[in-house]
Length: 335
Image: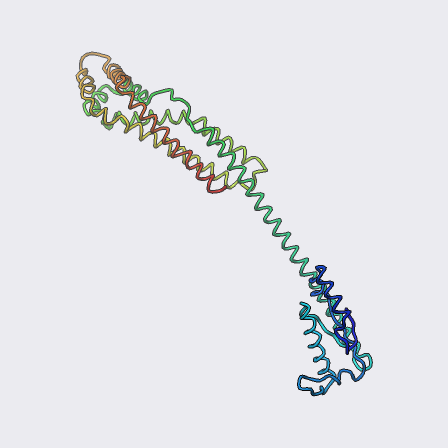
């Protein structure tokens, strides 16, 4: 509260004090806490003249003119909206001044309360953001582990059994007439479809080769689901677990299709093979075994090496497209 006589307000001391406060970085203190109390003597307010040179008609009008002068001078210093109060001890009511002063104190208190509330909201926001960031950090940790898994399982385990092994077994256990029927139709007989067994054999081997990877992935996911530190990412981990089951099915199905189709053109054109199997019918016991061995020999010939390689390429491509790429895409979409 800066006090000044009516005639001098705002006096040089006031203005110098304000300028010093502004120069020393106390502008906020001035805007929030500063108030002027102008103390007129009896009759001084009535001596005020307006712009036309006319005296004011009341002390209140004189106060308003003086207030305008004070505010104009303060504006020149860069200070605006400062409360300017007046109190003539001989005629003004002290209670009104007291109410105004209390109002200013309340304003300061409210300003601090607002700042505390703002700070509290900021802290709440920081806590929320921290929780979000912490959750994001946990999610990144999950993604990082999954990315390491993808990096470590780019390659399947080595193939142990060729796709035609299952066909070889089926030919030896099916009814002889069923085997003969399928040889007459170049492998396409509903009761013994050669290409179905090739696909099933490829799928079975693909399952065996991918079991270690999917077992490791499921173990990794189960470990994170059971770890309290990954609580905020449990939904995401569970989703990966669900997706992993779908990826596995799609991979095996793609491999099944590859097993059926990779050998189909060459087998359907293998006239010598089918003729040899067909004419063996009715020439004594061992028909199924002879057909199975003839089929196995055909697959073992060097001329079919490129087909085995082609199937292996398709299996590896399916592993990449049906498992690794979706896993990476899921990771990239959440990092």
